[in-house]
Length: 390
Length: 177
Image: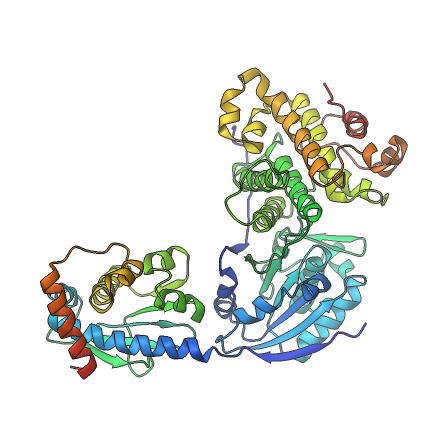
């Protein structure tokens, strides 16, 4: 792979993953001079009792824990303001967030609020600097992730903040805390992770460090999705594998620009007929196919990432690129079958008309990161029909 | 919506802590005994600096096993408190459960280290010597089928010598000299 002329890479996330990973949390908190963490959990975490192993992990830690459970995410700005008041009144000095998606965004915003004293996100949007060192924040995500938990993004009521300083410094992935979501939720997390990872890998200006993270995330996501499609055994709990893939994909994204398939997926999801994860899963193969053709980039690595080295070796060199893209589409077809049609193969499967999709994705620029101009229409048409571009 | 805040103390696992406390107490006395009985352990201690003190325990507040190398080149068990004396080498498990895994022989020291459950504060070379000492002591104290779980490689020592040393170490451990 050619080395870019110049690049930057930063990942401040320390990951603890695997059996009894949660037991390290007290040690890590002490290492960051925290003695009274505020442990917050969202509603699904409270229902699935995922806070219990976290609280147990603090046993013998000689700490006082502030706990707020079952936090709703409907109005994140006011909830974050209430939590900030609790944090200050009770003299807490760290945050442990157990949850997923928008809840983690809220936790990151809470951390920014208590670290800077600024309660208005517009101040940061208008140029106020996000400080390098915020208060300690540990994130304990579930396997139902939207891929942005570990990124430097904070989405708050239509506003988006992004900075590498917003990436949580601590991540804990433990089989006890990731939960056991259903096949559809797990597949959606896997598709999001796969989208972020493959988009980061197959760009004209991918930097080598991003590729290391993205490659591992793509491998883990593909392992999880193949396991869900019932085609292969995976070496470990399925939900932990998928949660790890999503976390790595978030680290890969960091505070960089959102990739095209990701943006298109979220835009199509605004129609309410398909989830963002499924929409980006459908879009992914077409975005990649178009970009690789436009940039004359080899797609053969896709085959090795999505399946095994054996299959890669069996396939003639000239067929590997096409086989990789076909494998990506075939993965969706198999997931469609194993989830009784709940994972869509094409955008038309979701009941959307081509016009709906076109309207929903209007205003999203396909430019940049090696996307050729005029490709968006082709991508959307092919993703709607489920037909390869070439 | 009103959020409900509650405050909790982190709690204690008295049973696990008591087990580790007793085990470390016994092991500390056994290290002292082994340094007077076994040539390998004696040699390891002779190679350590005079008054070198090491501690093995659990974060944040113990229990610990504190042992000092004496002027004669043997070991002296100093008790379970780490604070009264300066310690040259601290080996601590990050969490009581991590220590409990190792001290119930479900995970040996190299595996615990590989899984990042152990923190070493001091010279790594001395830490390796201490691990060798602890391995030798565990081989003497434990029956083979358990000791195999506790050490990386079970050594082939002459059976007669092992049984004789084991008896002497047990006696000295119980009597504390």
